[in-house]
Amino acid sequence: MPKHILEMRKITKVFPGVKALSDVELEVIEGEIHGICGENGAGKSTLMKVLSGVYPYGTYEGDIVYDGEVQKFHSIPDSESKGIVIIHQELALIPYLSVAENIFLGNERRGAGGMIDWNLTNHEAAKLLAKVGLDENPTTPVNQLGVGKQQLIEIAKALSKDVRLLILDEPTSALNDDDSEHLLQLLRNLKEEQGITSIMISHKLNEIQEICDRTTIIRDGHTIETIDVAGQAGIQDRIIRGMVGRDLTNRYPTREHVVGEELFRVEDWSVYHPTQPGRIVVDNASFNVRKGEVVGIAGVMGAGRTELAMSLFGRSYGRDITGRMYMHGEEVNVTDVSSAIKHGLAYATEDRKRYGLNLIEDVRRNISAAALFKLAKRGWVDGNKEIKVAEEYRASMNIKTPTVMQTVGNLSGGNQQKVVLSKWIYSDADVLILDEPTRGIDVGAKYEIYTIINRLVAAGKAVIIISSELPELLGTCDRIYTLAFGVVTGEVPVAEATQEKLMTLMTQEKSTKDKEVRA
Image (cartoon, rainbow, N blue to C red):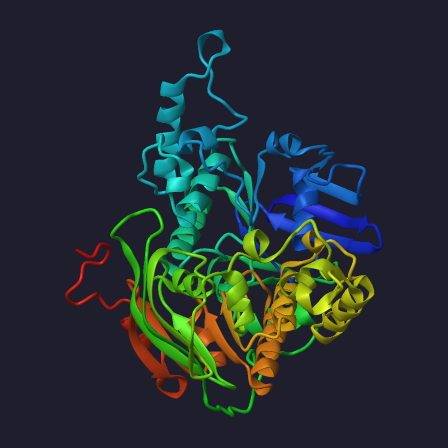
């Protein structure tokens, strides 16, 4: 009979007014990769915070049995001392410290007199980096590395603590396909070569199917079932059914494609890097979008998709920007974010926590933030009207919150994204640029976001979607532009598009220009 390294028995966790977990059961077999699936707000991250001591013993009901013994973790160091290490979705690295300093932060390698032995620190960091497949100098500042490499540094940091049970919360949500595959292969290697057990929370069901031995489904704070994943046919449909409580026969809602006249056009748009003179990031890009149309922008990481969007939205990114922008057939001069909003342009950032929301403010204030002028009364915001507007969006967008006075930082990712969309819809924008609108969101919440997009275009708005998920673009768009090295390399009607065709265009080299620097 397989040995259980972990059993969580009847775990119940209550926050003021909300029961986040109710008698949750979880059993993890030693040496397996165990998935945890559920909608945003189902209680997955809360359960892992209970396990890791973020929510200490005494603040929840139930038992944590690890290695056959009931544990009473009062802090993260308590759980780490037993070999349980959690890597959160928001990476906990200090950007201006070196790789080695981050790996051993709080776990310093000391020499004579209690002073840090930097030679030993860098030497051991180099060995850990080799284990996770990184060929980086340990003295490199972390902020000089991409998010994929930072994720691997977090795992190296976990290995430095003699990890036995590694918990990863949405580890690939911000990674491209190559970095995601590298990380998944690393988890396989840790399992096979070092016997490390992993728990992986993910909304990417293809990854759950690819790498996990078993997965536990959680819905509304309850354990639904634990199922074998490896080699099982139709497992994704079964997981979805468990997550949402029903069959989701179509992951993309149908809509009538009623496309009108051109609404927004960009011509010969070029953007230079803000701090690296001579480096062109967007190179003579041209595209358009019509009323009632959803247009996608596809490209690999680093292609310039987000830089293009931010530069269009009030020149929020870049320098020496040139080109022309037309709204309703007339050229407009958008010099800052305020003028972009005034001309009917909205941009929902890919990083909703950092740029899209004020996490310490409530739902009401976040929804009204981009269009306070609509609530102004003799220079003051009409508070009653602000609450009324927020309540209307809470209902129409199905934002799951007990009150619009709830702090946005306490909402699940899917509901935070609905608040971001509510903010820009309330601004009455004609063109909405949605950058990775469903990143880190479960399939049920994704469906709701797609439905909202359909409502917008049905009302005559135009929507531009930037996404790293090609199936998402194929399932939601009318046309797709491809971007490579800052250059628009193709425009494909969705009826003629395939993932292979898009990927070919997305990786097309510049023909006569340098990839990075224009002479």
